[in-house]
Length: 215
Length: 215
DNA sequence: CAAAATATCACCCAATCATGTGATACCGAA
DNA sequence: TTCGGTATCACATGATTGGGTGATATTTTG
Image: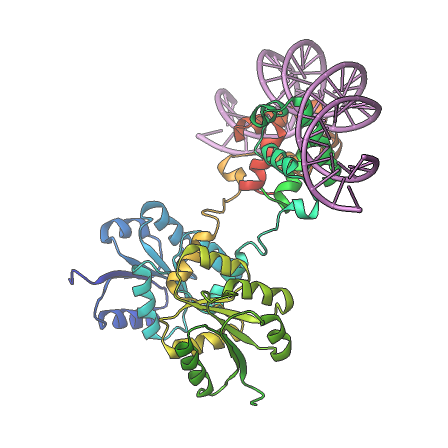
């Protein structure tokens, strides 16, 4: 066993593809295939026994699929870099994989050279993904980091401050303390906030504030 | 002018690099360099006059830098694909660029072939970025987008329903009506919800519900 | 089946909130 | 300088909420 090579486990149900990957990895300097399995059924044990650096993970596999496997890995061995390797390019799968802690997301049509690069990247702290996947990931980011409600609703500085305290769960009394003003003044400000936001209760104000404003 | 080529404008203050890029683009099939400028000072006019498909944008430029330029483009010609092309790899710049609508983020050490690929990707709806940049983008995503509170907090169906009504700004009385139960029952449910969420007011419950749960 | 969880309702009381009305003071723009 | 906007405070009243205690019926689950 090569001590400096990247230790890799492959999960892939298609025998041909699994074999191709095995050949590719075994034939490439710096990579060491330490396991290749047909699904994630025994993934927990495999992680602790084999402690891989990088896992190449198909999604659609029988019995226990790749997303479940990914989650298991992140629970018991979160330091492992998991690279999703699949034909699926739909938002749902990408979203779930990324959110579950996959470091990269490759499509099966990735050429072998790129695959090796990607494994290397993943091992070295990168997050390799095709540009089409990257675009989908970008779409998960907040569309336009709001300019803050005080623009749209024209809240004053003080009102914005108090609304924020409200959102954090402070009562009138607590707000009065934190702002060094009287409860009546807080009340007064909040009345104006309600006017401007067109709401009539803390609950509505907080919901509205979180949904379209500062937070 | 080649009608099917990707129309590109380059913003880059370094004369040598600008020249290199020009040569590269002019010498490559399918790409057409329609402008190369030293900064973003006149970017608005340039957009409307030249209507590029892709803009290759340096960040550190005198007078008007690339991030400002990016924002201007997104205001007046949001359909233009802007590729950041820079030596900076810090979170701040990446974050700002991505949030401002850049479709990709390349480092200047990107080899020419990859650069052309990236431009192509950007033009075809991808979001090319180096894997190190991608990793930083992933870190901007919400750490773990909860599986919904009723999992983590074990709210019952009824409680979840009532919490949702609360979040929408309903009073106890309104909830009682909508659910066809008495206010006392609503109160009872809400008390249990507070227990489970570890909060003590509607405000806190709503904020918590929105932040980590269903909504 | 028996125990546990869930959904329902009731009553009480103190704290908090929503709203209205009005006043004083400061500041910057017209 | 006057007016508009903002921030501050006060008083009053009724509605709503939060917390406690407890009961009953149905459903789920071990």
